[in-house]
Amino acid sequence: MAEILKILIVANHLKLPTVSANPYWDVPSDAWFSPYFEYARLGGWIDGDREQNVNPASPVTRALMAELMYRMNTRPVVIADGKASYYGEKFHGRTTASGEVFDASAMTAAHRTYPFGTHVKVTNVANNESVVVRITDRGPYSEGRVIDLSKAAFEAISPLSRGVIEVALEVVDIPDSDPIAEPDPATLAASEKKQCPEIASLQSISSSTYEGVTLDSSIPNRITSEQVLTLSGTVSNGSLVRAFVVDSQDEQTIFSSSVRNNHFQIDVFFPSTGRYQLGLLVDQQKVAWLKKWWF
Image (cartoon, rainbow, N blue to C red; front, side):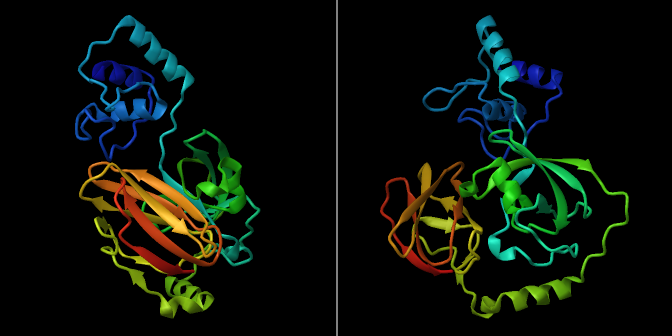
């Protein structure tokens, strides 16, 4: 099985994904064949058993080979470059790093390195929907995120309720003109502080707030509306972590993440301003803490 997957993927010049965790229970992330099984998992080429074992050393029959070839041709896989989110409405009308005024309805985006004016094709790997955007701003600076889309661009390839999606980027064209000079970082920082008067009262939620969960880092107790908050960390045991967000009307939204190698990552989405409580639940264990958050 392992050798057949490599033959199919290499022969068709397919781009391999980065493997950060075991693709299947019996496929270690550090095995030579793990990228090929990760590709097959993303495309739904292989059906694991109840324990998600795929037996990488098992022989391949003619019937299975035919099925693999059929799925390879009917279930294309787009390898993600990272995650994308979108600007909240509060940034509409503000000046971007390029000097342009941000328009939430325009097909634009922020990227850390692409020259201003570059057109980039952004593909949602979950549904293969694409949109072409123009780079007008710098960012994002959250770990794992490679681009921030305007609200309209994000909505063109995903429901806004998703908040964060896996995307692949492809440069369509780069402008011939000289790049626009970027503002001095100190000037930008001062501007941000002026736009956010609450910055002086910011506090952090400790990484050890939740019993049985160790967060990778402390997190702020204030964020902007429509921002996505990524909660990641480790648990001593358990296979699923759920985040419960409760607003002032006791309306509850649940986000979840599977646990791999004792690590989890959940993207929590806050659609509007207000006061929230946040609980974390590992498997069916009792929620140990509910922390009041203000936004």
